[in-house]
Length: 118
Length: 327
Image 1 (cartoon, rainbow over the protein chains, first blue to last red):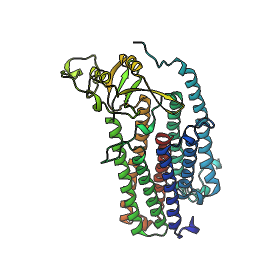
Image 2: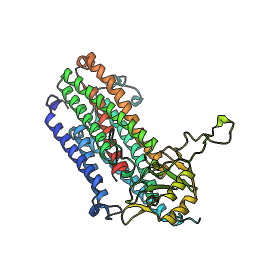
Image 3: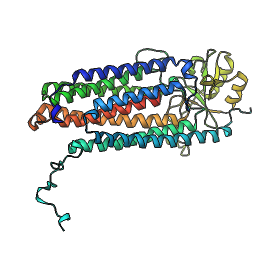
Image 4: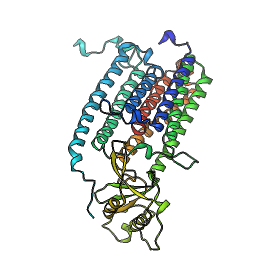
């Protein structure tokens, strides 16, 4: 990107670092406390706490990819070729596999014995 | 005919792909993105496999908070702190990397050198931390017993906190011999080091101590904690116990499901290998910067390309962190 080759983005880089740090600290605090009001809930297959972790992770991934890996400054077509492909394939695989895993659990669990005779 | 013959100005013999730049990205950068995408899909394959197995054994999967609880120089139960530190180290080394790229754009050789060096140091600290994490995981924390069907049973106190075997087991005065293949026992598999206590010592001490309880792998979904058994139920479990387990390896794991250890070793190991190769590449680039290779070339794009790889390693860690330690 010849036109912005000589600009310095140092300020922006430190801002992104601050943001990533804050998100990590929030994640760690919630991970240690695990408040019952979030942890013991069930929403779309998992707890609200887990949804919070997932969303914060995706926010972190966005900032790393966009600002550290410079995707923001690449051509839109290149960015989409990379991001959309990965997001689609990963979502597809994850959905199928987790449904499958849940099914196996439902089928298998009744056959696992948790009591023993002496 | 014409379509198969290279024309004079096609530049196809040029290693960098000639002057054509699809998506306005250079050849090297484009290839790095190809690699990163395939690697991203590889890692997601691993993590999805982990997810599949976790959903499959949802009611008995280990709880990460109870597995990774060590902090250097301090004794006690500190979940998350150490891995949070590791995450910071990796994010920070990503920042110094992106600062190196930024300085490269402005052709500031001295700054690029310093930032590359800091990135390498950050990577080394992370690798060392991971080795320490592995050491703790392999050596184990509490110890447990394994039942004949492969289930793990752990010991807890009256409050439900896990306690180590050494906290309640008293040694009997018996001679123990390590069976090995080299002793002529060709039919046994070498089991590695003997666990610190024998099964009968553990069972005897357990029965003698009313404050020690047995905990199964089964998760009580009401409270999302492992189920603690009554003393009488515990004795039926212990009657089926076959071995004392200390630590984790690919065959047995004191923290619960062996699969958990398998995935932990494989995924963090594969990521650690990426960090390791990233450090090697960074070192090469670092020396090239010092030698002035990119100064002569008139462009620090090479720093940008290895930067992409380094950030990708950081990106993967963000997901490993979430799926192994948080969720």
